[in-house]
Length: 331
Ligand code: GLY
Image 1 (cartoon, rainbow, N blue to C red):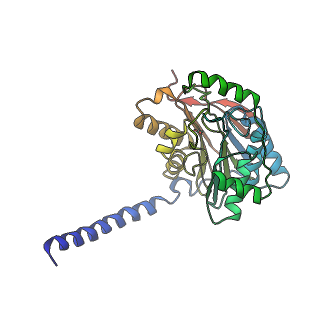
Image 2 (cartoon, rainbow, N blue to C red):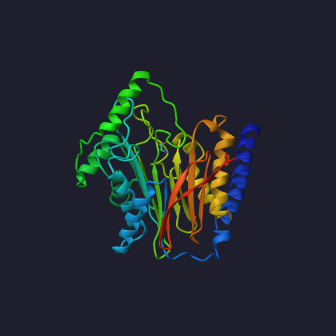
Image 3 (cartoon, rainbow, N blue to C red):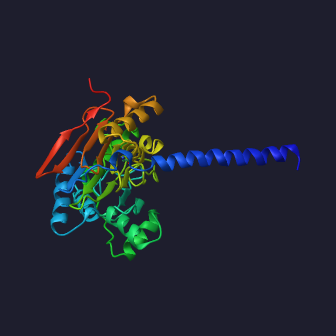
């Protein structure tokens, strides 16, 4: 063996050794340190983004009262928003892309760590339910575009040609200048991210959106990306996001929030760290909004955004109310 080959072999072995050491440490740390003895909240709760989460929370709760688990709550909750065709940022009523197509993104996760997602889906009213079918009926996690549409039809979902007059009007206006300018807290792309905890203390979540208004045809945001727009780990907690999807994807936002909680952070501290990570990686962070929500197994809540104005809806202990999140740029 030449010296060089010997060096490569030794380095590789050393590298492996080092890697294994790091891995061992990571595995040791992946035990839910601060949560190991934490009590599990078993009153049930629903947490969702924005004021529009209020009726979604109520629908989720109704699903639980009808015998549903956390997954049913998450699905039925966000279905309520998808079915609200006056909503311009979720479902078929949402703003179109710059070619005039309303394309939908959604994902769902259950308490077992299973996940399903659809991206760039057209003409289907309830993308979150299609995501659930992807999770439950296929060996895959993500289906996109025409494939997702054909799968939905095969699963009994109906083709829907609904076009929102209001979103078409906005598109026609946009065509006059053809410039995308994020509007903070309107952002042209709100989302509903919803986390549900059932009476067993099990967690599930769903996230669904029509994405950024007047986006490039084919653009997909954070909402259907597992670990970005949503992440659920039933041992630890769950997180979801709303706002500029690109910034959330770059920082694996929701996964980061859950991993911070695993390391002992409260949900609030974890959301704050995820926003700070965006600040660190984006010189222009003042130009857009991102907000995170998180829940841990004890039923504690976190909410934090870049800008003031991010609201969230919380249904807990008989109350369903809208709250203002704190933010990085709070004065
Ligand atoms: N957060 C939704 C999107 O960026 O599409």
